[in-house]
Image (spheres, rainbow, N blue to C red):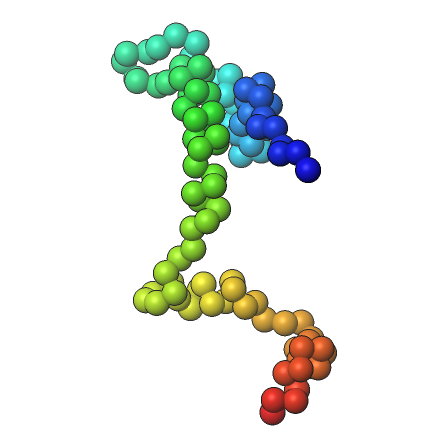
Length: 100
């Protein structure tokens, strides 16, 4: 089985522009030339930075989990084991009924 090819720069740019559009931001609203008064990044600077982030950070972000002790532990437990719609059926399938 062959390894998947990494996306091209054009594909990454299209992904970034799509995600920004879904969030309600138009990358074309940024200036083409640097503006020293405001310090707003140019389109190319913003796209270059986002391209670097998208191609490097998601693997690290995807592997992150909150600590299992302390304050976020209860919220994490709810996400890790969400309530079941029909717990009796699931318990019967998984053998949880026999343990009672």
